[in-house]
Image 1 (cartoon, rainbow, N blue to C red):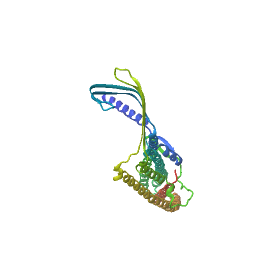
Image 2: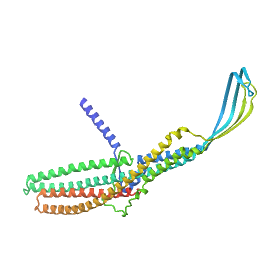
Image 3: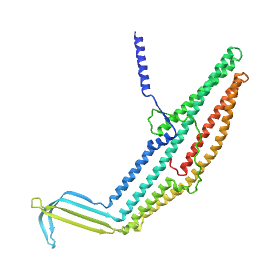
Length: 431
């Protein structure tokens, strides 16, 4: 009785586990190149991070514009004095107590012309730099997503090819089994065929696992649900042909990274003016208040005050040691160095991408010819097998050559398409 109850509990547990697993089943999402291009630019978290950084830069620019606006205050102040005090004509009064209180409204303003104008312009240039860097980062993310998409496409098609070969191998194995039973073939030939079938099955499972890994990587890059399984909607991997454009050695000027670096340089140069030309400009201080003024217990009367000042500051530390100027000069030199490094990076990226397009194009043509030859050889081997003029291992070998030719062609087309996109990005085109 106890054994029966345990079996019932076991079946219930298994049923609950199956329900939980099926409840979290993966959602299949067909994707193509156009879908990846759209989703990578819209959903990627790194792209969103740079968009938020740009919004922060815009907020800092708005904050910099507040430099000339006054501050309004309201409330009360008090003053208590005991001991001695001096009258305006110089007489000293002793043993006195004096109290007063003020309550009202006032406004203060301090305008630093030496910093205000330049800080607003520097903040604007900094925001422009962040904007261009966000465009460059978005381009890199999209390029990475495109590369992952072609990897997904290759792994999925490889799995499809292996499945087709499995069907062929299974058919061949069954034919040999019939021939062995009829005494036409040797038992060893059937065992060899079965071994080849198992080998293809293992390769098929490995290809499926690789496909699922590529799907997970691309899904993560597109910021999709973790249970989403991506399937390539394109049934064939074809080489992309973009319009050929002459490569300009000075084309780095249209790259978003270069424009961002230049905007950062301009921002530093503008900020430096706050400690050079800014010294020639004064500070303006204005203040107005109005309210009731009097003692704690005596009658209070209205009082109105106005004060103004226009001052030039001359910091000797800045004139003697020039620390601020040296700091800005060092930052500007570093920025010039970053720009020069980017120019070298541009030349390297252009050369690498251009070489990738040329060499992968040549490899693709060779792989295409090899695929045509291997396909024809496979077809002839199958026909000879039907006529019993070919040994089974010849067909197995033809399968292996065909599979390798298919994989080589997929890899070369994928590399060629990746290189095409890399060249577009290197030349400064936005994806």
